[in-house]
Length: 176
Figure 1 (cartoon, rainbow, N blue to C red):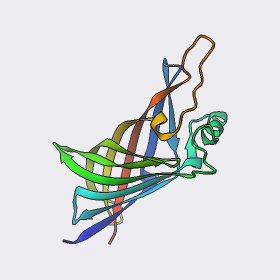
Figure 2 (cartoon, rainbow, N blue to C red; figure 1 turned 60 degrees about the horizontal axis):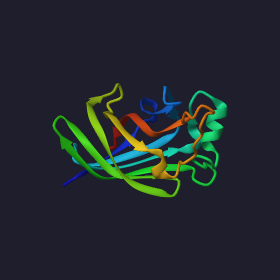
Figure 3 (cartoon, one colour; figure 1 turned 120 degrees about the vertical axis):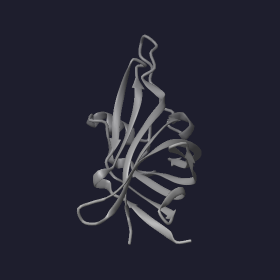
Figure 4 (cartoon, rainbow, N blue to C red; figure 1 turned 90 degrees about the vertical axis):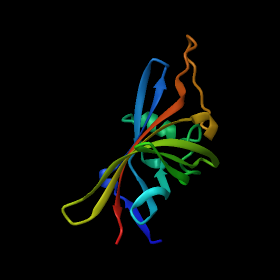
């Protein structure tokens, strides 16, 4: 069976995360630099092999001081661990959507995660390139990946929630 290689189009993709702040509001952030690929059997996405990585130094929460704290050893330790990576172990059809399972590595900790994937479809762009779009959502617990910094206010409120919601929109370009 012929395999097809697809490469991430960063111009038409975004990686966003959300975390609770003081348990009462949500802070959003992005990673601005990332890369990925998927390998399929022909044009069938089921059982695709997916590799994805993020540049930790590209984190952006729209607040420079917070971004610096997130890059510090108290959180991601970007100097020592510059990449967050994901490698799929399965990609299976689930009704009209897909379940993506794989190993997520943050810092030096690798854990299995399951994400929900909606195939937006595929289309041909102005230049004759075939593109496929996916929306990926899920949730991870930051503490399971060694992101254990905690702050507590004088009143006892937790500063940063443990659950991180992931919202990823990606577009892949089919390689000739």
